[in-house]
Image (cartoon, rainbow, N blue to C red; front, side):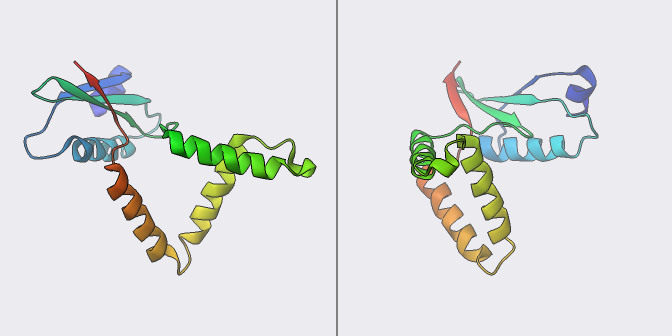
Length: 136
Protein backbone atom coordinates (compact mmCIF):
# COMPACT_ATOMS: atom_id res chain seq x y z
CA UNK A 1 0.00 0.00 0.00
CA UNK A 2 2.90 2.33 0.76
CA UNK A 3 4.35 1.68 -2.69
CA UNK A 4 0.97 2.21 -4.35
CA UNK A 5 0.64 5.50 -2.49
CA UNK A 6 4.14 6.61 -3.42
CA UNK A 7 3.48 5.79 -7.09
CA UNK A 8 0.05 7.46 -7.07
CA UNK A 9 -1.50 4.21 -8.24
CA UNK A 10 -5.19 3.85 -8.87
CA UNK A 11 -5.16 0.05 -9.14
CA UNK A 12 -3.46 -2.74 -7.20
CA UNK A 13 -3.38 -6.19 -8.76
CA UNK A 14 -2.56 -9.36 -6.83
CA UNK A 15 -3.00 -13.08 -6.91
CA UNK A 16 -5.35 -14.93 -4.60
CA UNK A 17 -3.86 -15.81 -1.23
CA UNK A 18 -3.41 -19.49 -0.39
CA UNK A 19 -4.68 -18.85 3.13
CA UNK A 20 -7.33 -16.14 2.80
CA UNK A 21 -10.56 -15.76 0.87
CA UNK A 22 -10.66 -12.85 -1.60
CA UNK A 23 -12.91 -10.92 0.80
CA UNK A 24 -10.52 -11.48 3.72
CA UNK A 25 -7.56 -10.51 1.55
CA UNK A 26 -9.32 -7.32 0.44
CA UNK A 27 -10.32 -6.47 4.02
CA UNK A 28 -6.73 -6.78 5.27
CA UNK A 29 -5.46 -4.74 2.34
CA UNK A 30 -8.15 -2.13 2.96
CA UNK A 31 -7.10 -1.98 6.62
CA UNK A 32 -3.52 -1.31 5.49
CA UNK A 33 -4.82 1.42 3.16
CA UNK A 34 -6.62 3.03 6.12
CA UNK A 35 -3.32 3.20 8.05
CA UNK A 36 -1.60 5.19 5.28
CA UNK A 37 -0.98 8.86 5.98
CA UNK A 38 -3.04 11.37 4.02
CA UNK A 39 -3.43 11.88 1.17
CA UNK A 40 -4.54 8.33 0.43
CA UNK A 41 -5.18 7.53 -3.22
CA UNK A 42 -8.52 6.07 -4.29
CA UNK A 43 -7.63 2.50 -5.13
CA UNK A 44 -9.22 -0.45 -6.81
CA UNK A 45 -7.83 -3.84 -5.84
CA UNK A 46 -8.06 -6.78 -8.23
CA UNK A 47 -7.61 -10.29 -6.87
CA UNK A 48 -6.89 -12.88 -9.56
CA UNK A 49 -7.77 -16.51 -8.81
CA UNK A 50 -5.99 -19.46 -10.45
CA UNK A 51 -9.15 -20.22 -12.48
CA UNK A 52 -8.92 -16.79 -14.12
CA UNK A 53 -11.77 -15.11 -12.25
CA UNK A 54 -11.12 -11.65 -10.89
CA UNK A 55 -12.65 -10.09 -7.78
CA UNK A 56 -12.58 -6.30 -7.71
CA UNK A 57 -12.71 -4.20 -4.53
CA UNK A 58 -12.76 -0.45 -3.94
CA UNK A 59 -10.54 0.53 -1.02
CA UNK A 60 -11.38 3.42 1.26
CA UNK A 61 -14.40 5.67 0.98
CA UNK A 62 -16.40 4.96 -2.15
CA UNK A 63 -19.94 4.90 -3.38
CA UNK A 64 -21.37 1.46 -2.62
CA UNK A 65 -22.63 -0.91 -5.24
CA UNK A 66 -26.32 -1.10 -4.49
CA UNK A 67 -28.37 -4.17 -5.16
CA UNK A 68 -31.59 -3.72 -7.16
CA UNK A 69 -33.70 -4.33 -4.04
CA UNK A 70 -31.79 -1.60 -2.16
CA UNK A 71 -32.41 0.92 -4.94
CA UNK A 72 -36.08 -0.09 -5.03
CA UNK A 73 -36.45 0.35 -1.25
CA UNK A 74 -34.70 3.71 -1.32
CA UNK A 75 -36.98 4.87 -4.12
CA UNK A 76 -40.14 3.68 -2.36
CA UNK A 77 -39.09 5.58 0.78
CA UNK A 78 -38.39 8.67 -1.33
CA UNK A 79 -41.82 8.41 -2.99
CA UNK A 80 -43.52 8.08 0.38
CA UNK A 81 -41.67 11.07 1.85
CA UNK A 82 -42.05 13.34 -1.18
CA UNK A 83 -45.79 12.66 -1.32
CA UNK A 84 -45.93 15.37 1.34
CA UNK A 85 -45.45 18.71 -0.48
CA UNK A 86 -43.26 19.96 2.39
CA UNK A 87 -40.63 17.42 1.30
CA UNK A 88 -40.90 17.90 -2.46
CA UNK A 89 -37.25 19.02 -2.53
CA UNK A 90 -35.95 15.81 -0.99
CA UNK A 91 -33.48 13.77 -3.02
CA UNK A 92 -32.54 10.12 -2.75
CA UNK A 93 -29.26 11.09 -1.06
CA UNK A 94 -31.25 12.78 1.71
CA UNK A 95 -32.93 9.43 2.40
CA UNK A 96 -29.54 7.71 2.58
CA UNK A 97 -28.08 10.43 4.80
CA UNK A 98 -30.99 10.16 7.23
CA UNK A 99 -30.79 6.36 7.31
CA UNK A 100 -27.03 6.43 7.95
CA UNK A 101 -27.35 9.01 10.73
CA UNK A 102 -30.10 6.96 12.37
CA UNK A 103 -27.98 3.80 12.13
CA UNK A 104 -25.02 5.64 13.64
CA UNK A 105 -27.20 6.85 16.52
CA UNK A 106 -28.78 3.45 17.13
CA UNK A 107 -25.38 1.72 17.20
CA UNK A 108 -24.58 3.75 20.31
CA UNK A 109 -27.70 2.49 22.12
CA UNK A 110 -28.78 -0.78 23.72
CA UNK A 111 -30.08 -1.81 20.28
CA UNK A 112 -26.54 -2.32 18.95
CA UNK A 113 -26.55 -6.11 19.48
CA UNK A 114 -29.91 -6.47 17.69
CA UNK A 115 -28.75 -4.32 14.80
CA UNK A 116 -25.53 -6.28 14.42
CA UNK A 117 -27.51 -9.54 14.48
CA UNK A 118 -29.66 -8.19 11.64
CA UNK A 119 -26.51 -7.18 9.79
CA UNK A 120 -25.11 -10.68 10.20
CA UNK A 121 -28.38 -12.06 8.79
CA UNK A 122 -28.09 -9.72 5.81
CA UNK A 123 -24.48 -10.79 5.21
CA UNK A 124 -25.43 -14.48 5.46
CA UNK A 125 -28.34 -14.06 3.04
CA UNK A 126 -26.26 -12.14 0.53
CA UNK A 127 -23.02 -14.04 0.62
CA UNK A 128 -21.34 -11.01 2.19
CA UNK A 129 -19.52 -9.83 -0.90
CA UNK A 130 -19.12 -6.16 -1.72
CA UNK A 131 -16.99 -6.95 -4.73
CA UNK A 132 -17.68 -7.55 -8.34
CA UNK A 133 -16.53 -10.52 -10.33
CA UNK A 134 -15.42 -10.43 -13.89
CA UNK A 135 -13.90 -13.09 -16.09
CA UNK A 136 -10.26 -12.68 -16.96
